[in-house]
Length: 95
Image (cartoon, rainbow, N blue to C red; front, side, top):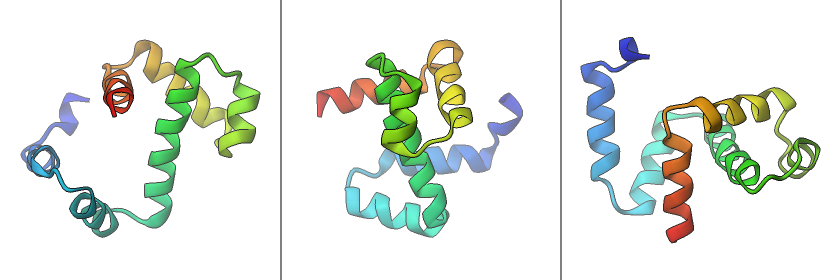
């Protein structure tokens, strides 16, 4: 994934890290992504939260509408990824 870390990606990271107003962040997401992409990305966070609480795949699938493939991918990232989901879940727990 290091090939993905370009100056353009770093610019996006700088913008996202600097924004602290939810409405402004949402406006940016609406401009950057399709409605479907925003929904699917948000859904993955919900899947990660449910997986971390040991919710069975079948329950996650019926609760969120996520496919078994998406659930498996999120699970793989939770268990063997770079820690992004874990950091996000810790942040959500604080709030």
